[in-house]
Image (cartoon, rainbow, N blue to C red):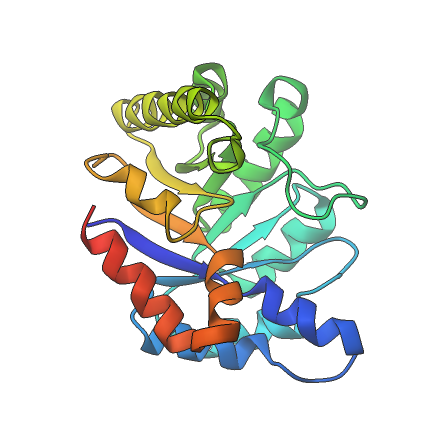
Length: 239
């Protein structure tokens, strides 16, 4: 059964809307773990729009499963990661003006910088995943760079507006997952996944873990965080 890592960024988004100390993503992480999640994901952005340095440090001290740190491949973030020692770093593209991560890292463009980041983090005994689009060339480049894992961007599939586009996008995800698995990379998938789209992954055994945040936090507003996580885990168990 694939694992579930829950992104708690949007708990911090709500907190930062008022610049106060509630709701606390650290408390949310504890609930997520108690509900059965296999890990907690946070994205420490350059502009600190939601998760703060304090959050990452406290999470490192309190998380009992695993801490996955999403970050840009910058000197500042590499230094923070080497200090904090998350269980996994996922390197992602980052633009200040974007509402959320819009796609995978283009390794054709950023190969050298990403390669340097992977080496530095692995030297510090931190395994590295690279967030990539479902593209065979990107998967192969991630393998050549020496990444431990890839996280396949599922946003195009989840946001597809027609059955044809949805089917084509999903086929790319499937082919990319199978290729990454053949290359002995760990295979995660995430971005835009929800309680309906997760069902399409039934039978795709190559995926080790799903990274899901917005849909779970959104559902938690109505049913509570514990229940929202447990409902997603129940769906993943059926895959």
